Amino acid sequence: MVKLPVTKVASAHVAPVYMNKAATVQKALSIIDEAARNGAELVVFPESFIPGFPVWAALWAPIYNHDWFKIMVENSLLIDGPEIDAIRAAAKRHGVFISLGFSESTEVSVGCIWNSNIIIGDDGEILNHHRKLVPTFYEKMVWAAGDGKGLQVVDTKIGKIGALICGENTNPLAKYSLAAQGEQIHISAWPAIWPTRKPGLKNFNNLEANRIRASSHCFEAKVFGIISAGFMDQNMIDCLSKHADQDALDVLLNTPRAATQFITPTGEVIGDTLQNEEGIAYATFDLSACIEPKQYHDIVGYYNRYDVFDLTVSRKRDIPAKFVDERSRTDTHQIDEISSTD
Image (tube, rainbow, N blue to C red; front, side, top):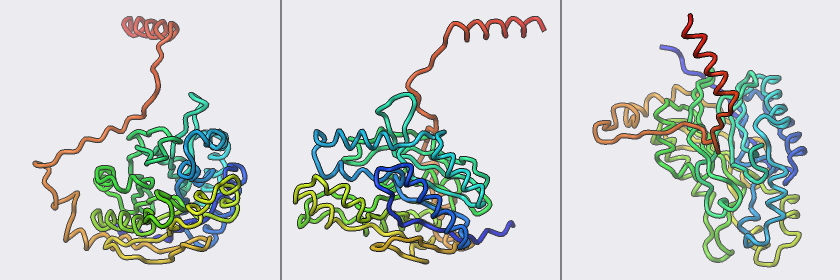
């Protein structure tokens, strides 16, 4: 039997240069450099790290957020744009794997963006490109719905890696679809804060909610987990509070902060934990620790009933239209004629 790898992983519990894609890319490059120098083979960034999480959608009614949305669109990234190219080059230069959360734009529409994640190989190639299936709550006013194309686990020399974005880690079918591909390292990406109520009205506790969801998947799938949460720094607070009333400011300052942590296949926390300070968290995963718990419950092996349950997952990329022009039909006809004479 092939020996399962032992790997050091890093998760960037850091703030973006809020709504500034160029500056945030430079910050990402410095983090990759530091993590690689410290021996990490996988470097993970939180949800929508570039250009930052649109928490403004929670603070004000939609009619007040047109300017914010325009800024968000202008600072979102094309999958084949120079910013992604720079991150890919860093992965190749340092020989590390990278998971990057970013807001993705498209040439098809100047106003369509997705909440996306890519996994980049140590050779700089994009191994998987995922768009969040369903934007959560007020995120629906910012991002479009994704598709199943990115529900894939990538098989690498450091293990089989899968990733889901924020609330997708509440979706048991999305999680199972990754487990069913032999996932061994699960990345869950989260924002720094996720406001749902005014202070004093029992806000959504994303610290506990994130840990519960990530730990449950690690325990059920018997995988190692990386809870990669963003960080809100003073610059982000200043940007958001510039025109905030007291209620919005209270929400911003008093919503629970998320934490970056690492989880074992039995649901325990290991390695570094970062919550109220910015930095890079590290842990070491020995993937052989995934084996013994599988003896107890293997939900994609003997501990299931495929005669009772049946899951079909569509992994096709949604596209707005299919075009067949005259030249395409002519070329096809000519090819058919040539083929028929051979």
